[in-house]
Image (cartoon, rainbow, N blue to C red; front, side, top):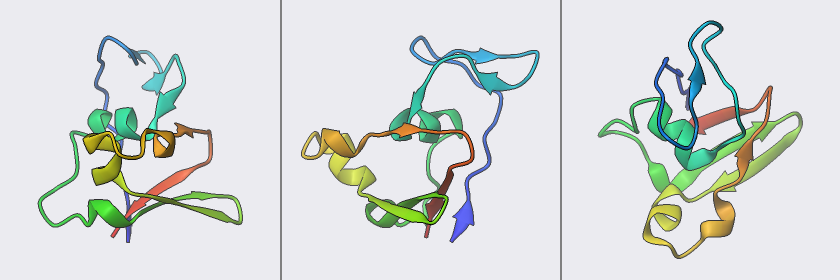
Length: 85
């Protein structure tokens, strides 16, 4: 699994502070992936994991996008790592 690299992008719901390159608001998993220019074609988006300290939070990005599991679109906290196999 690889850490996603965040780039300096902005959208209407989650603008990025261009001075520091950090979001000014809370960012959800789906917004963080959008900010990173989306998953690549080799990503296993149904098996993503957020590593938060010692916790591993499974994320099914496909279910978030389809609307089947919107509760999985959690806020990414400082120090979290979004892992995409």
